Length: 446
Image (cartoon, rainbow, N blue to C red; front, top):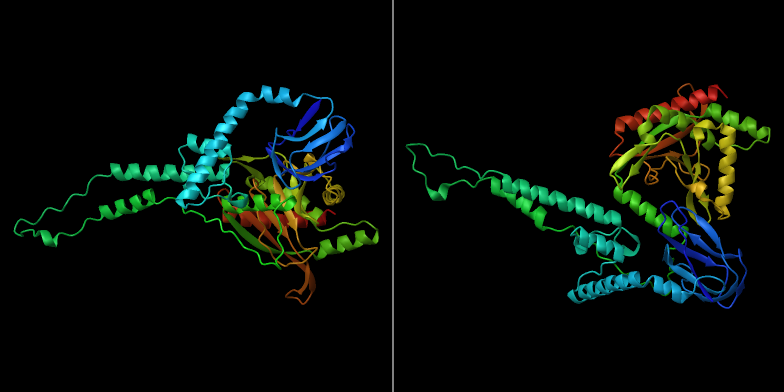
């Protein structure tokens, strides 16, 4: 019998995954529970074992391709539901999907004939756009390869509602009344002053009639000696998350200087005892103390309901540099752990990250992120918020500097990037000063 294996729901709201690497090829005989395929989502990379044994008949999706949850990715000659049975059970959805695909094809062909840009959007996105009466030609895409995302539709719908409200307000405004002429002065038509109201109406009309600017999808023609780097794997995930964060969140950054001379001394003493520890665990511990006083910075943006949720747990993400790119590991309940425990967990998570063995628990539910580029270099940075969080701390290189008394001190710049929709500049400044205080208290108690 032919068994179709479908991409399972890995959890955490993941709707699609990328085929990173097949561990089998067509014609291979596979055993049950043998590693079959490596899948990457925006949450984690996992190896999926074979649910049955048999001969691999067909690999449906190749390395680097994106697959929706529930789609068949491989056919195996083994025990399991027949392909024919599966097709019969899903006959109606197939018809519905075909109708949507035909509509997509017709719309795309029409766009090509009209000389307009080709809208890249999934059938689901197109259906939602139709339900909301949104013209996809007027939507600015932010997804990979110019793809329209659900967030793009949300923004377009908000803009559309705003224009409709402005139109209604303009229509409801009373008509301007001409000033009554003085009794002794005749009024000449050619000397009438233009009323101001029509100008306002014109502004509303331009706003109302001018659609959102269209983004041209530019095709780059590489030269023969150029190297082409495809967006796949972790780099694709980074591309999508950074685009989303910067296009949705209005960032601002506050910087401060901290004296870490005493902390440097503590770390040096620990190294002499063969205890390896960096600055990051101390900063994470200080961050959790500061977040207790400024809970808004420990929030998550709930995009579906357009609200923020102040989290009761302090799950601190830490940026990890891997050969494939930057990823974020999460330390759960960091406020309840010692500096030594935090250091140990960071080391363990970083090891799993570099070996592509991170679990969902390693990457989910972060509420605030700390990014330390100081071990590599860099005096100052403006870190990008790890969406849907609302703030991120940048930790940098320690440098020797003389103070006003001529003493050599270990100094570091720290930066805090925040979501300006929720966090005000004053709150960010107070938080970063409290962080300095928390760090100092931690040093005195060490």
